[in-house]
Image 1 (cartoon, rainbow over the protein chains, first blue to last red):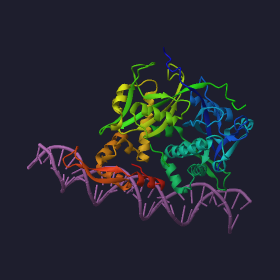
Image 2 (tube, protein in one colour; image 1 turned 90 degrees about the vertical axis):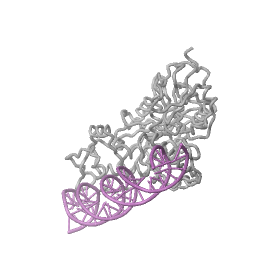
Image 3 (tube, chains in turn purple, red, orange, cyan; image 1 turned 90 degrees about the horizontal axis):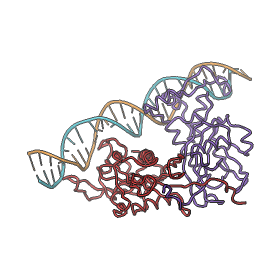
Image 4 (tube, each protein chain N blue to C red; image 1 turned 60 degrees about the horizontal axis):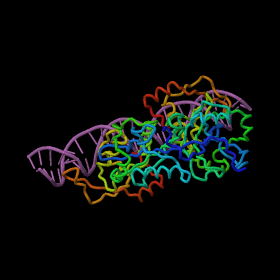
Length: 229
Length: 229
DNA sequence: ACAAAAGTGTTGGTCGTACACCCATGT
DNA sequence: ACATGGGTGTACGACCAACACTTTTGT
């Protein structure tokens, strides 16, 4: 007998996504208004159920793509939530993932279709089930991750100014950073390409655009270089 | 209609435990020899299935207690593993937990009953399924956790010498530490009670025993004190 | 007396943090 | 000419890492 597990209980396995974006000022999350029971009409994370022919990472990517139209972005498994009555409809275990996307890139139509909306972290509404604690947990993981590896770049457009980068870090870490110290630290990592091009939208003088140098980053990472901010 | 999930696929949800112990010299893990299919006779982590009336933390505690007879120890959820064919018998998702126990305290009879055995990290055998990567992942999480909070004490008996503590940290971090720097750092945290009593088993001179001061630790933690080693 | 582990402080270097002024440009 | 954000370097203090000798006691 190959299958000796037959008497065990099976459960529904959900995947919920905390989708982070950054809009030049604030760290934001993308929430949907549920149009199905239970808790219809309330705000919630985007979620779905694991299917037979996919693993959890694939499910998370599918769910992200359903809502935003994008794939191939930074995603990370966060934690599994299993309180018995977390979903009143049925026993459901949920595996939370978080994603970092460039807020410009999402597909407007899909967002409308799901009545989805971006919320600043500080202004997000109450969510259903245990989604509030998932979000809290995701923010703390994002802070940790950001302080170890430069994943923050995932939240910016390909070309960005130092000022944008600093504001991004400030909104993730929720503290003001010193301009000079920040630039010194980033420059000392030597993983940015400074372009000739300037962004003129934010000031009269204009500020230089930069690109993330993936190659240099990978090389340094392989050598065990420390990217702590 | 309350239940709108009825058409979704259900899965078996397993919980596997990486059980760490420390025997004065090496960091060890407790493994069992499977006496059931599939992979009967091979080494494996202790595991079980989530039941209807418990959450994942409870399942992990139950599984740990089944094998060791102990409960109420440090446990932490690690990650969920979901590769489609990870278990050849049936689609199974596994949530891994790791536990830190005082290696003296386990119940010998239960261990024998499961043909379980302690292995030094470096000498552990090949494990079934994806259990090897679970262990690798657990070690790296344990290192991180240890460098942030003094959870290492969970692996020691209530009274221990500075030397034991240092050896523990060395085996977790897999590097030699300087005796004076280590003691200075630990002392500066001020979370140990130095006893009058000496342990005479390790040297002629004997070395003072210490206890972890849970109260002081909790107070300091609440104030945001940094316990980095 | 000697072997074996325990215990104990100081110093130099590095890294992080605090801090203020000039520049370029559009209006 | 002035207002607005962009860009740049230094000095001090805190923390970390390296390092060697004396003590105790059982044999």
